[in-house]
Image (cartoon, rainbow, N blue to C red; front, side, top):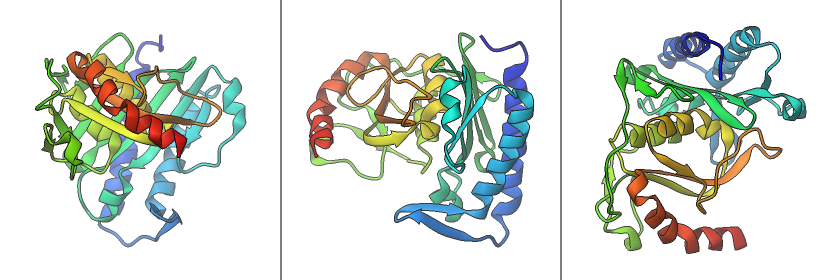
Length: 260
């Protein structure tokens, strides 16, 4: 378990990073694509540097895995690792939409034990500590009590015809915030069926889990963190009562992706 008071210190560092991102949001900054379809900007790098300095001082023995830092495989031998996305939802940040957040997780022996999403454009701070629940500000989070997949609320811009029995709700660009919506009972299901990065979801997975959500990969398998690849095949976060049905519905599609 994390040391007493560590989670609040992590939240304060994430809030400092959020303030930096907000201060730069109204200014001119350089932007480009790391690879086609993967935008990045100067602010991502500035926030990443701040987080690495502050979190590194907090736990000097911890490893580091971040979207905006070259991967150092030495993290694989560390018991504790910071898993960070300095701005999750960069597209919304660049479009001046509020659906982005600073995402910070502390992973201990492959599992997140502290998770923070600081979303200053939404005036929100989401926090969780293993075994101590999940919170948005001072409000404790609880997943929705849903037991039928039909009618489940999904953060999405569009849904395939086969999923027309589901209900779309507003979708922030940040996948971490979409998972957090499940934690808050504002959505019932979030699913991806593609390879994704640990830094996108580590903090949000703990927040959802501590709120009572069921969390697996796209095939219903447990998620692990600080893996050699730093990736997982999809994420499925849902109300517990519909998780098995969601896995069953997505299984063939997920296997087709893996075969491709």
